[in-house]
Length: 345
Image (cartoon, rainbow, N blue to C red; front, side, top):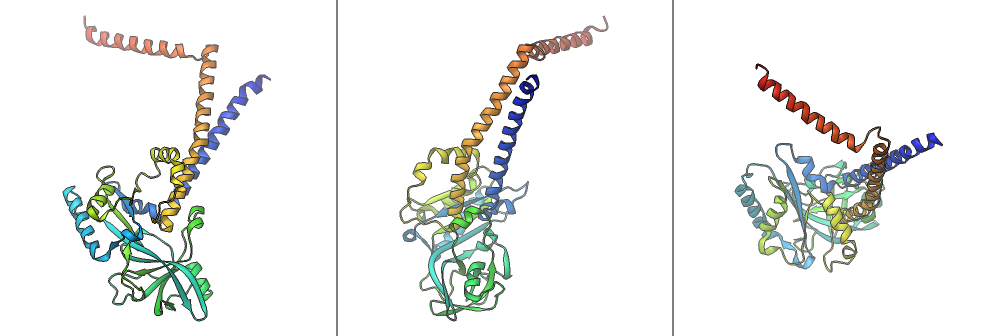
């Protein structure tokens, strides 16, 4: 019984510590799969920190392509004013629509994104074949497929150079990409494809419902503030602005946990792209995981406090001993100071 009394609290303490460590490690693993949220981390350096900010709009409030130049000018002005005008930065714009791709007698419904700017840099997807189309290409009649879409249409994924039909227009497959890993990405991801903003297969000029900027971050919150300022009157009421630099922080996790019920209410016409839906699901999961993490942390502190009180009661090492140690250390210092001052007399 004596050994049980000694080792049982130790075993409980170590078990709680291990469980808490596994939960914290799992938190980091969950956010690591969100490649779109980690764009700033891939580009920043210790000397030049960066952050990513995003804006999401409803289709009725989409920013027309003709206005995108004003956003670039506004961001450049904000960076110049902050003394970071010489640093590299990125802006990705995208608009979502449903589409049907065809190849011979096969067809598939997809989520199509018309993209412009540095979209394929912000979204670091693994290429299985081919390459990404670029704004500088002579022709913008190429398309990127995800692996699942390629398999439906061609029964394979090494299909760069093949052709698909979109809205009666033939497009060449520029590349095939893997879907992002992770459970939360799998929950919201459908068959997906990407074309450049002025692809001839698009029935109408796209409006951008998502803007993502990776900017230098001289002070906390600068990136989100700069993007909001650059949009100005183009940013309507009801738009969602996210600061990806802090969205998985402890403070934001507590905020999400407190407002979890409100987050379950729909946002009307505002439809998020799959990567933002995955990030919001991860936010909810991380918020809920705070509950067992807080319980384990509280239990660890309780066990530690009980052990300290027990040691204090046994006088093998106690709280009063700390006070005596401190007083003895102060007295020894006074004696050394006195000896240095009056040593020669």
